[in-house]
Length: 338
Image 1 (cartoon, one colour):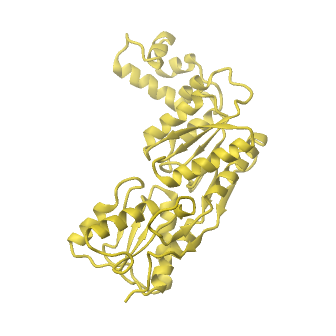
Image 2: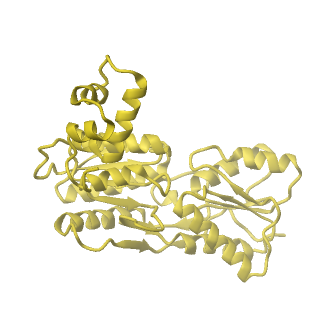
Image 3: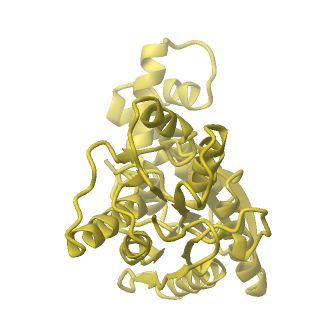
């Protein structure tokens, strides 16, 4: 296999698979005349060697395009829209334009988005990864294209990244509900494969331990980043599970919780208090004054672009992790319990 960052050629793929250059070319350009088994084997070899990225980015790639790609999990989520706006503004101030791509929190779509970004000859990629083993990041490495992770990071071998202090945020959210006298708290946590979800959950559990309060059985529910969290709440209510507060992974999830609670005749906050995470209302005015954890979303874009420009200037510099502070914003969806 060619060394990392080397430009893989058709001959390399032919040698790896034992097929002719002509057959390899047909497979890579989706032309007829070869079996699907052969095509699949060649595409897999190309993927592993980084050829797809190299081919799409162009073997004569040189200079800079003054363009970057932004790959986010779900641009329908207001949080990601705010991320994108902050990044685009910061890039624009530095003479860069951006292309915006949506992974829909799907690893395969994320990888295809990376390939698309490389095909546009971008100078770098800002990525909110769907999981730890993101193959798109390795593809970027093989092609020598800088990558900055935003909002999430990897536990090991992580590219440059800008994240929020998610542990602290989880702690503050749970601590606030505990200070209001809540003991039966429903935690709607994100998937373990997402670093921000893991850290927020750890923070919540730490606050419970410090208050000598046990997490009620069945009250730690994992929900998808973009999936409807209402099913989990519906099931708990149907089973007669009692809780006086909801601590949600995000504002997006918190809004879903408020909706389904109201559908069941439960008032927020009179019957159930709700705390979110992200403080979307700092950017978008909404009718529900949600108590939440605020994070500097615009600053994330500025710091991410700073890391990107630093990486362009110093490709061999040590990887940097920037952790931005969070704070509790008290509005009107969480009150003292009984």
